[in-house]
Length: 173
Image 1 (cartoon, rainbow, N blue to C red):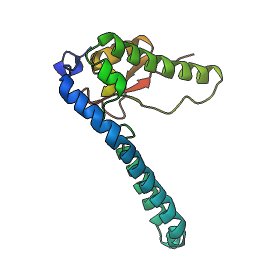
Image 2 (cartoon, rainbow, N blue to C red):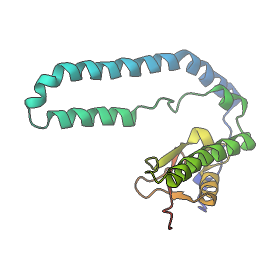
Image 3 (cartoon, helix red, strand yellow):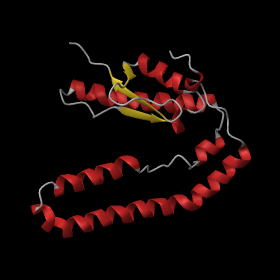
Image 4 (cartoon, rainbow, N blue to C red):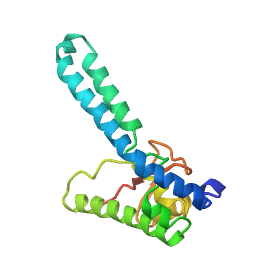
């Protein structure tokens, strides 16, 4: 396990500021989702009109790359939002431990089901964001994941203060 302090649990946030962020989340998150939907619909509308421009070499590849970058950079649950479970369970290690265990167990069952059906496993790496593990730390995520056959992804690095990226260890038959 990592001995860096950033892999440990994050300190609980002050209740007053957490409450303010929760109220702002309730007010602003629907607007955030509406903005994402409008931008996405704008991409679709532009794509329909820009079908004519596909005769230009590289236009289609560039447009699809732009859509991919948009999808990768925009979060459905932004870092600034606070959900009701987070508000109620701030600092509760058991709550965060259960969240992490449930997420890893779900991924493991999907991987095992795909392996049993002789199908391709779900694409990875799988990200566990800080909102799921802040009360127990990224070190616990890694410890729980290793117990079920996962390890840190080598494709995309993890940032223990934001996200832990996991990949399933290859299964030898």
